[in-house]
Image 1 (cartoon, rainbow, N blue to C red):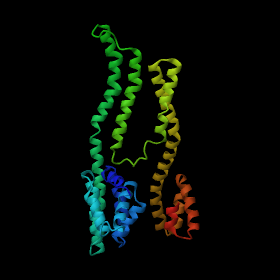
Image 2 (tube, rainbow, N blue to C red):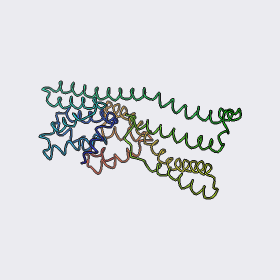
Image 3 (spheres, rainbow, N blue to C red):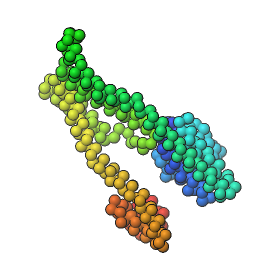
Image 4 (cartoon, rainbow, N blue to C red):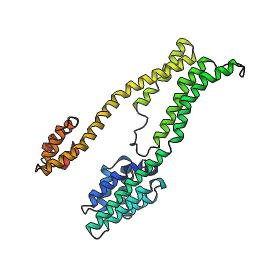
Length: 321
């Protein structure tokens, strides 16, 4: 595993977003009396993206004897975390100390404190991010409202009053208003969004981003036909934007269905609890509650099929579904 990817993952502010998930996975292992070695390997195998990269390196260092044991490898990574991910490292240190606790009650209390620290760190980073949005919002307001107003009203009046030799060309105003200002606003939004600690880890530029580049050949083709550069830029940018919206529409629609299913699955957890309290078996409660929910019905069918294939292994059936 490359060191650069691990270093980049350690320095990412989104690492705090994965803290509760990582601590939850370690708690599920350590809370049942499992070892730290097993907990770290579980995160390395099934954890969220950034933490999976980091814990994979920890396992590799422990297996290749770069570090004496798993605890030493984990501590070395924790010590290299930047200040912005302090809560993530503190929660991991508490999880390490939970393994050495003498009683089950003490272990549970330590793991509970580790979970609270991870959640508080994420909450505090979210507050810090929200408080930093004032300046970008004012810049976007200035670019989107004030600059076009000045270009379309104030500057022409100054030109007519003789303050300038000539008023700004109308086509130039169109290019600045319809192309340059939106491009600047999009750049600011992308830059700010990249610093959002609670945003899921992205997958790169993406297909819709590549479609946006179609504005370049479209502008070139229009220019060869018309010879008008401002018109070509405006129409090319408009064509690229339309193609991007069309390319991204299907994916957004699919993500909307996924989010709706996720929200409905959270409600199903309570329904499963009610069914269990009524004396229903876990398999029947899980299948019945998810099948009754329209958004989750495909998952219920998959669970039923996987349960038959796994011959009653409920945990494996849930993972496979």
